[in-house]
Image (cartoon, rainbow, N blue to C red; front, side, top):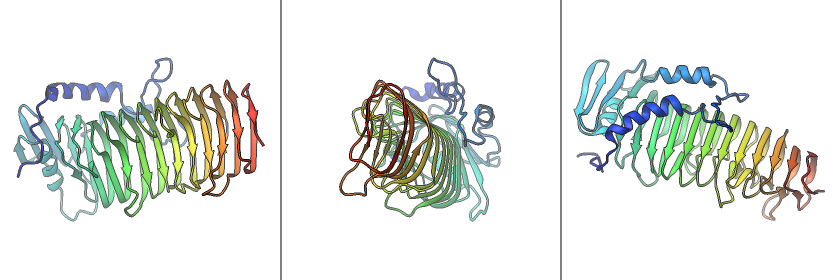
Length: 391
């Protein structure tokens, strides 16, 4: 049976290949435009092996060392080879990809790699990655929507990596994970027109040893990156642009080291934030820097989350609270600036314990600081012209 929805009429077939070159070379994650229009690599503390030099080297290496290769186009058809042997020739992009994955050595105990050089539409299909698989898309994968599933997903597996990915479309989830142990996401470029970017499932077993180097996500109708039930998370940079809800949302995630979370126009008109922790998140969370412009909140901690340190923030003109800490404990913001936008607020609801052991060092200008109700052992170290109503 042919894969579903494969013959989508579109004028994208030729243009998508050219777009992938532009995306890879000019707009790769970790080389996003900085304020003022200059290129800015990932210089965040803790973002090991993901700076601009490494990013350029990794981008140039996409496709190198592949065991299986997918080449071709929608107009000419697709060819899949495995170590030089042709395993598929035909018109279906997603079938070519699946045949490449299926050609890898059964029962392998180390990774084999599939590199998708071709650009096309996958249709309304999900691509499942088994254990000990490296999978990358060096072209651009335009994806459809399968309810409750990811365009690419790995569930109940080990030792999976996605070194490079360029994705467009409006999937249910761009990437979906659960019960995955030893996952590496490298240079991930999600330029969506809906859906949710990267999702770790709430109601399935948790994941361990997860690493993301650089994730760029834009245009989602939901969150950019959302984790549930992850123990052991390392992130270099998450760059979120024009996403409907949170840029990076951590739920019930612990032992995480994050370099930079950078958001513009994130969660506009909602209560979400460029960086949000919720649902008993923590402990063991360290974030080097959160930058947020416009949108909704900059930083939001809620629902009994605990044990997090943000070394520095750079927040301006957020449309909701610049910072909201609500029913959290052992939270530190170690420095940085808030300029304009919504107030810096410590708050509490009755269904969770009050804030406890909150330490905030900030320069706050052109907006206010408010603590209500008073928390337990709150320590403020404030400068700037912002009005203060604190305990």
